[in-house]
Length: 441
Ligand code: URA
Ligand code: CA
Image (cartoon, rainbow, N blue to C red):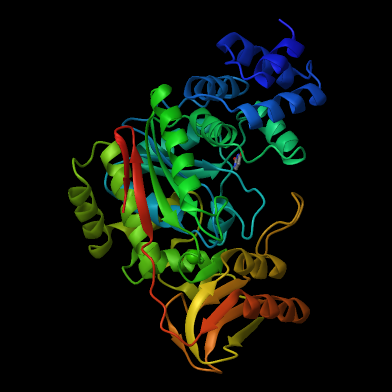
């Protein structure tokens, strides 16, 4: 088999065989096929596309390019959740405990990554002493005993994807549905879950800016899941403004605690109940959406959810007292209000820019080597549709540096669009994609 022939076949609109897909993924992972040939193939795929079978086979080949985590020693159906990424997304910190309290084992491994804030494990390190590094045996034991563990990702998952994604990034071939879907799903499948709930974000703060392409991506990923025998449900949700109020690390943990105590932001609560309900259905702890949602609401109102967070924190060496005394979390030196420049209704909050306002304060990593400042970030006070008076606080900056505070403030001011006319809010949940079809709300 020759790479040249595979490139030409796809360039001419042909369908690649499983052998051809395996050949190029294996060869590329091993370094036997050069970047320039794979670049040409990616561009051919970009223009000629791949069908469902090719997309699923590409995903499988990428899964097999590295470690596949074996979670079979954990009792029950392991359901994982993945978000395509947004701003201020605190869902895992809420979902983990409530879903676990409902009896679905939560075995979450996450990376730190680059982003506006740290990843879930960075956020959890706001609990002094919280340990995310543990051998796989201990991780599995924790899940079996406590029904929840959240750890750092050390395995070599889908290395073919890592190489391909970097190559696509510099060859203008990222935005092809099949390639994106295969990239995301290969990492999820390699991490060992039996079933997957996807939160596909849509809007200004999301990877997919319009609803049509978000649904298409959701459908591609559900098709892959179905093809490889992992029950997959995707929920398409709004990311036109940041989720909840807090964007930061400790700040988001505090927001998650509020939500687990039933006092969280409406949008975050709604999203967690929706995603959680599908996790319960896939985990066979409920038969219908209504039943599942009822179970989760009871878990929050009875306090079982917040208790589970304490169990998680204690099991991994953190101090669970933080949950009831949030003054123990790392605190920023400077706390500054951002005041509305005019009176009116909030029409837009550019989510990406709020993310950057948190990033410049040090809440996230600009390079792999940067250290995350757990204390800093932004807390919004006004969301889309809210009325605001000139001089009223629209947000609060938590910072450890005067100069960065000013920079962040300027970005937040520009991110807010305030108008005279009343603004109608849009629904958070746009639709659901399952193997049986798509429902748009
Ligand atoms: N996120 C991924 O992990 N892969 C893509 O290709 C795009 C977004
Ligand atoms: Ca948030």
